[in-house]
Length: 303
Image (cartoon, rainbow, N blue to C red; front, side):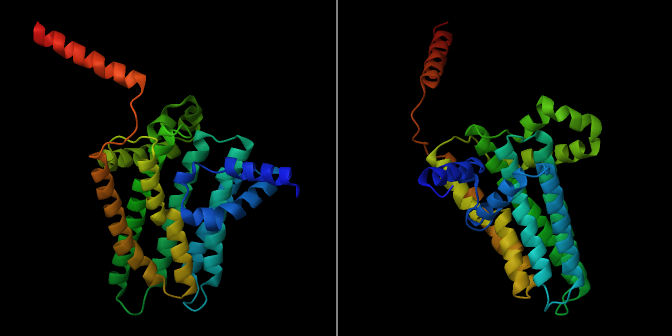
């Protein structure tokens, strides 16, 4: 594998384990994906499946939340380690699925729901640990506001990324995941999971009224890459740094102030982009459709 041909194959295998590059957060590409790829290749030679890795990620993430609520401010290294390992395996499960070509609707849905379960445990842990500088009620209000901000930012970013991957031909939209035949066992055997995902999808569609048309062009991919600077993995890295600095309160401030401001700026920037021509040449079908529409309008006027 140390030969040039072997290195080229390994590089190609790593690339195939990723989503579209524009849909990858910079933090993932620098911090998580390379190590997660090594883990995924190791898992390939074991009976472990992507769902097992997903569940292990959940156990570590929930454990990190428990440690946040139990350990003193000066000793948050174990909590940071658990959260980092959880994020690493959260990347590895998808990479393993792509390497094994075993990605499934249930896997995608469970992965998203488990991410929120880990997030809830982390915010509960932060709330339980408290902050002596503020009252208990004020602290819980701050934790609740940060948790809601985290969920909103993750939901809107995930919607934009999912729709881009659909247009780029490397993924399915939220509605399509619910509709494809592979989701049928989920409805029959895991009704609660499907119900939760349906509610999540409905919230996404309400929030996505600003989305407009998405195309697979440089303008959209550039916007997505910039948005990835405040994606969920970036949130995790900021939490880890806050734990190591023994200042978890900074994480809450980051989500409520900086995270929400960044999200609003990205939405406004996209709205502004929609008013500009994309610069993508029209296809022959689009030109034919436009000419046919003009012909029909002319015929109506003549009548």
